[in-house]
Length: 271
Image 1 (cartoon, one colour):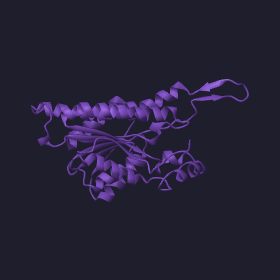
Image 2: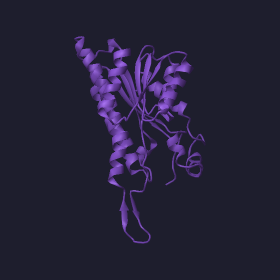
Image 3: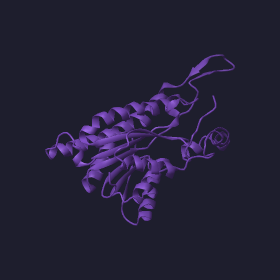
Image 4: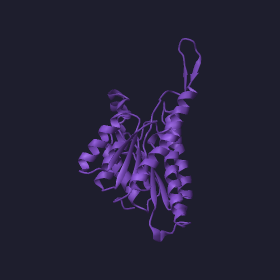
């Protein structure tokens, strides 16, 4: 896919990987971007992206990515002003880390991971990204149907691309029962969407970043990071968000790329 003139939607765009993807797409002359996040910081991020690009390329949308009505309103707004969305990077995500089962040393009773936390992480990290992607596919399908087009043909060129944000934790990671489950779940979702959405000319891929220098990772604490990450990576450091963003842009642009990409800096935790 060519980026010039295309319209993209990025969730979780106020920080971390989402923000880096927005900056990278602006540098690659994308036509316009809807940058989505819950916090007010999205406004300043949009201002920064536009200033760096020297043009109005990013538009701020503040709201909850798990809200169906909000999602539809974002697509309605950006599409009516700038055209059908053809790139989607749903990068919003959360962690609620805790051991799955912990025994109280005093009472001897087992405490299992709270189900409400599990459901919250599933809503944000798995269900929401899938539906931001499906929203785009549905609108591309409607647009094609309105123009009398049916099954996509290679001569048309790709009509859209999606990149989900997985994680090395999808392989399993101590203390991340909910987070790891959602990132593994995205593998099945991406593979299924790819099989279905290519009918409409839309590709779907999944990137598994390693430990990246984002607020989510920094929240683990400097001591934890120093002990558990650099010593077990080939790079010996956290991955930069722009390195992941560059890989995502590659996945969006290169139509021969499908499936999963591991961008883990060679991280292999001790047994």
